[in-house]
Length: 104
Image (tube, rainbow, N blue to C red):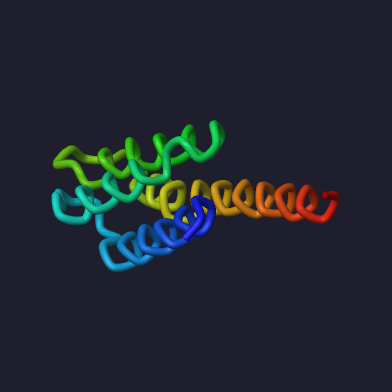
């Protein structure tokens, strides 16, 4: 499996975790899995690394014991906004690779 496909697969698993565990409370199992998956996604592309790092950090906040001022917006960021941005970058990189392959 190439790196970009691995990113998409990991992203799908993260989204599933976030759908199943959508309440802001301590959840070390969900957080640990998200952190493992995001760590595997780093290094593919600078932008992707930046966004998965933010996703992991925000998930740590979401699944912490502290109260959140606006847990809905935090969950929206980690379950929708950041995955959408990562997916868009993966699609962009796939198009670039396809165009390069076509030019050879």
